[in-house]
Image 1 (cartoon, rainbow, N blue to C red):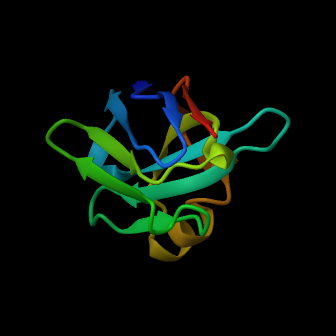
Image 2 (tube, one colour; image 1 turned 90 degrees about the horizontal axis):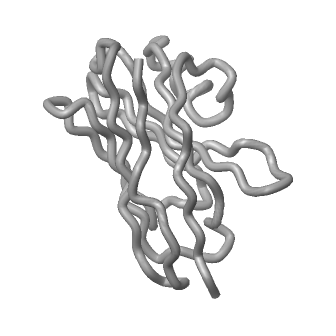
Length: 130
């Protein structure tokens, strides 16, 4: 199994970045892919999640209206378009794969239970300057 995040970098407040999560080695459509972030001294926080079989999406309140998650099943890749970035978005962003547990559990686990995820990437740094 491989999960590789890319697209992070340094951007000014108000700017945009597009993160990519390229995956291989597992049945992509059987999984949900979640983006989490972790700032220094803080716990890993769920940002957004997409179920690859029906494109059901979840967003943290802090990013709704600014971030958009999408999935390309042909490329086994998930994207996170981040607009109107704020300094508080600064963190290492991680991509994880969760074997789809059904709609109710997905909505419960998708953003709040990173320990339930099966696979993780190494992360990509996003830094937003003020």
